[in-house]
Length: 234
Image (tube, rainbow, N blue to C red):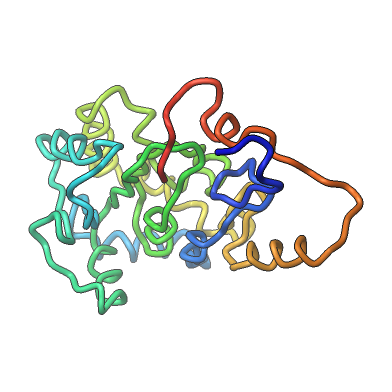
């Protein structure tokens, strides 16, 4: 990128001037009246772990290798072009109900980039399932506390599998990942993000507001990559 060419940043990064919120439109979780709704949800969960994967070729995060190793220890049903299970994207409501019958949903990103989160985890939290995230974002700064299990907290796929099996055998421990749904105050995005498409409105406001102050992003490449590292294509 040419030096001093850009004035504002408009990306998924939380340190952007305007944070794009397109993927967060999928974050519309149901709020439960009380924790008894957990018992109802648990009764319908007949499957163990599942995911939707349609990109089978260039996967920088190597999530395919992680899933392959994880599947040696626990059952993982893969829907989409890369799996053996079928569910048409033309009927998303049916797919949502189908995967809601699993205890764990693997929200694995195809790239490990700073703050990069696609619709996978927001969509997972929309349904009554526990999300297992794999990406480069600070999920604690974005999503409700105890609403997800982070792959990065485990030494290897075997350690993650052991923990998932532990939760499967201990409903009270598994319940902890649903407690955030009981309160509307906790069932919201952190970091000042909202599940509404406001980012384009902010851009319009900035472009139509005259300001005597001028800002220049001196070196966009250095800001994006840091002092070292490769270009992250989220």
